[in-house]
Image (cartoon, rainbow, N blue to C red):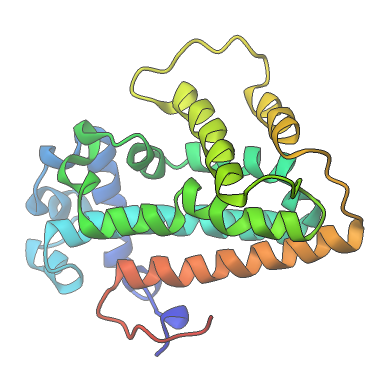
Length: 244
C-alpha cells in the first residue's frame, strides 16, 4: 500500500474515532501533561487496552492528533483552491492559509511552540518533521517559485531572500493573532491587510487566467504531496514509497 492510500484507523473503526475525539478534547482542555491513556479510554467509553490496539504509546496518539490537524489544513486548502483557482494568487492564498491554520488549534499551538499545551510534543521528532514539511516556511519555499514562474510574483529578487521576507511577514501577523501574548490588532481586517502587504512585497500579480490556473494546479499538486508526507509521519510503519 502506498502512503497516499493509507487508511487511518478512524476510517473503519468507530472506537478509534471516539478515542481521537476524546484525546483531542483532553489535549485542548488539559494540555499534554494533564491526562493519561486511561483518561482517554474512560472518556471514549472503552477499555484502556483498546487504545493500545491503535497507538502503542500516548506519544503516538498525540503526534497522530497533530498530524491529523495538518491533514485537515491541507485538505481544506486543496478543496478551496480546487473550487476557486483564483485563490492560488499570493494575495489570496497567504491570508487563506493563515485563516485556516489559525482555526486549527494544534497547528496554531505547534506554530507558536506552545509547551504548556503540547509539552514535549513541541520537540518530538515527528512533530518537528511535520512543521518542517508543512509549516508556513516550507509551504512558501515550495510555492513562491510557482508564483514567480506564472507571473504572480516579482522575479528581480533573490528567491531565498524573497521567501525569508514573505515568511517573516506572515509569521509576524500570525504571532500577533495567535501568539502566546497576542498584541492588540488595530486593523479591522488583519487578513485583508496581509493580502495587501503580500502584494506590496511581491509586486503586482500580472499573470493571466491561464497562468493563474497553472499556478493553482501546481499548488494543489504540492499540497497533495504534503498530504502524503503527513500520512507517513502519522503512521511511520507505512512504506516510504508512493505517488509523487
